[in-house]
Length: 269
Image 1 (cartoon, rainbow, N blue to C red):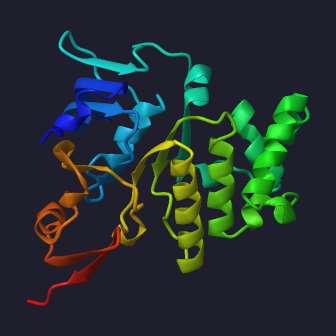
Image 2: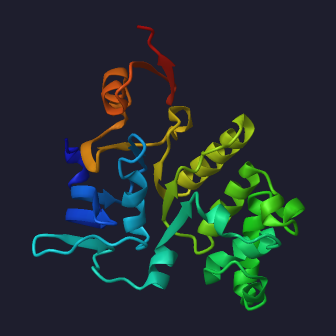
Image 3: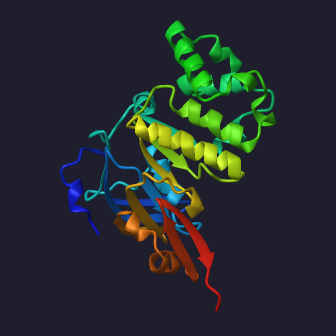
């Protein structure tokens, strides 16, 4: 399914006949898609369907199999410098939290958005302009009261908010988020949802994976359904419905939408 309203949009990522193998196992198959400015895109699918792999294509930590019939372009380039990429796209992957060693301060985690390395030594090398931008972010995201705390001592919600701040130090117009709401309590989930909506209001485009339909962002305007490594549907949030999601997850559920928010109920046999 293709939305004709997209034909005049500007594309920032173009994938044509893309296949991805990991340990000789095919994870993504025949991916053909354009991602465009102006879209906030939700990716839904069962565990193991290839959602995270798709996002890792965008941060260049995974590469597709090349062929004469395939192409993969980011910002109209098949080869892009990783530092240029970080300035254009902010990334938040759930495994980032585990990469931070014990004893690393929250300030150093956020400042690593500039260097890519979770180490206090690099925080001292920031320019004055970078320090000002960092302090503005810390205040804006209400992290100043815990900024000197060890990152690993923080709650899941605080960690996620800090990594979100880290992802936008270069003020990118695109955010790629892998399960940003995973393991968050009700309050932390709500705060993160509000923070992301705030970024959307600032013209940041978000592409994200979530397993919790109650966490779907109200301003989502595109939905990709992935199953067994293939994009099986691509359309509007109208895809978030009882019939479609029951088939996607092979389970009987009822999907309810109210004022731009969704919830799921089991259907008794």
